[in-house]
Length: 237
Image (cartoon, rainbow, N blue to C red):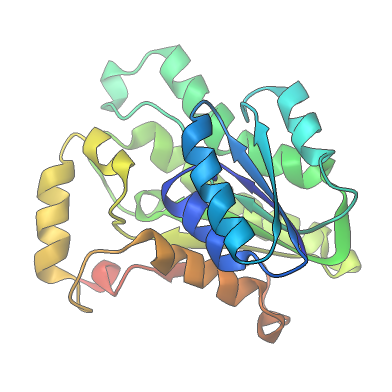
């Protein structure tokens, strides 16, 4: 199975790469700057018996996206995980902050799906967050990007259906990753999630990776255009 994952050097992207890697498969590990972290992901992929192809690239850059799309002759699974953006109140953001967020978190989902040589029957997965549906302090731009990603999931699912390509998105709750410290009220959110998540703990990157694997599995062959919430039940409160 040929797999292309954006933002795969750490956190959720790394967990997805490790979870999906299979003997004989190939996994493109995209990273922006941290080569050492990407090498750690590659080691996990190789330990699972798959070939790891490390590719540095900025998902905002069209030429970099074309290079990523051309890394494999055929793509069975495309996962767009990369997300860079400004975490600021709407009135504190500059135009450059807004553009950075949407150009890294939303636009590549469309462009890579268009550029990648997706095999018939392939699976395309977006990674979203509950900020697409609920208020999170400082999340105006990122929430808009993630909401757009979820809407695009439905559009792409229908347009790609003649080729049996399924398009779904995993919407994660609060996940304990490095990015949490950049949220204006990240510590308070973590404390709340630890106390009130019905399943009794904060989410981990592998919780999202497991959801991705579920949607990629052939048992999910009749599921497309859906946004799967994986948050331990926190959004039910």
